[in-house]
Image (cartoon, rainbow, N blue to C red; front, side, top):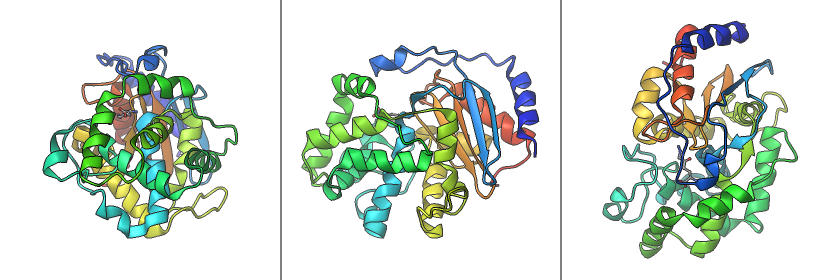
Length: 304
Ligand code: DON
């Protein structure tokens, strides 16, 4: 399929789209980005590439990184991982505290902040140099050996990170955080600060469209079964309390971040990354979601 033609049709349809979203403001540095940026990049499993707009501009991938840390932790802990974090949609905002006390410090899934903090704790506990090893893993996946954390963003989030501090303290009290809280938070804020272009992001997630194996480099990152499970968690939990809406309208497993990025994969076909910084009330890119809805409608192809 010529996805470039589809992009042109979708962009035409988006012309009348009134974006009522606003860029994230609770991480001060994220406001220093032109909120009218819009980029998209699609990589097929045959390594065909299609792009539009600001697809080569770097942006903060934020929560999208939680999928990558989950993959690392899953490889280390195997099915034991799910003793400390669930796989159920939370139906609550990404930074919510409400379920955590009732659930005795076990987060509903690895993509809400509480769950990603537990995953960060697991990696801090297992790895000798957690930040460096994470970076190496993400560099390999993205094909960019120069990929870095953005210390400006990490520090900016740390300066306002009261909610994440509350979540991790509550879980520490329940015994579900094993390492030093400040070390885990530092890892987590750096994880979220990773910057990528749409092109790099779609390449990074391509292995999940191909049963855990990068179809270009042929490197097997995850077993087929684990890859299926990561995609299942993305489908059910990747958009927090908007996961149902994303499944309903787009029909692909995916993950969003408050930097305005969304990555979605079509198993055995492609990985697509969209970036538009204005967020809807649920913290997901509003134009990014609309683009993907029109895209899967136009191509008449989703996992359903
Ligand atoms: O911890 C936070 O709040 C951010 N570093 C990540 C949140 C996020 O990206 C939610 N996604 N839509």
